[in-house]
Image 1 (cartoon, helix red, strand yellow):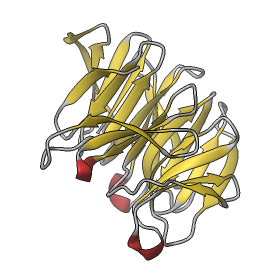
Image 2 (cartoon, helix red, strand yellow):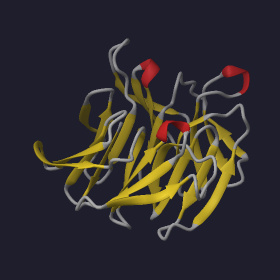
Image 3 (cartoon, helix red, strand yellow):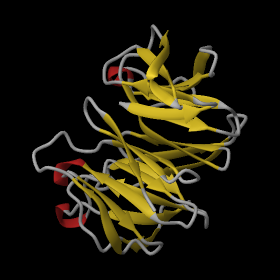
Image 4 (tube, one colour):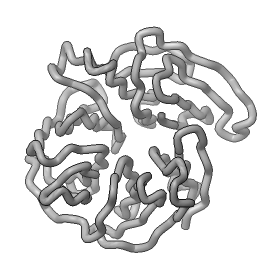
Length: 246
């Protein structure tokens, strides 16, 4: 599933859906539209890019072909990126930073594109590092959430654009599926198997646990941070909740 906000509209997708639901971001009880993308098969994540004023959707397409859809606030859509252009592309998650789009592709490839669709870099990680999600920092590195790493530990790492490790997070996670980064460089981590959302400092040390939910719950799967408003949207399997963060 995924959630994005652009031009006072909230866009929501759910697993195995071919439709995007649109709500008024200022009054989420107000349903505005349902946009059907007939060829969308397995949506994984969604992100809004303020510079292009578009919403992007990662679609793994049942592993046959991968695609990133581009959606306007008026409901027009097209295929921004597909495995015909990038062989072996199976998009798992997305992040936007300073006008660039970061595509995390199954199982271990990071692809970053500029506003016009030009590829900026492609980073292939070793096979023991299956990436769930990644965000871009202000000093030209990625912070990646890994499903597997050395000795089967599940960690966060900061890597450079060549794939070299800059630092390893001191906190162990069970499954860091989604990340967000605030303007100060702090990293927020959704860890559904521990049913918590964790705040890390710039050096990936533990700052505090933002949300500790009920063990055995649905678990946080996607995050949307609106730092100007101090709002954090936490997406679970069938629910989206809004939290105020300092």
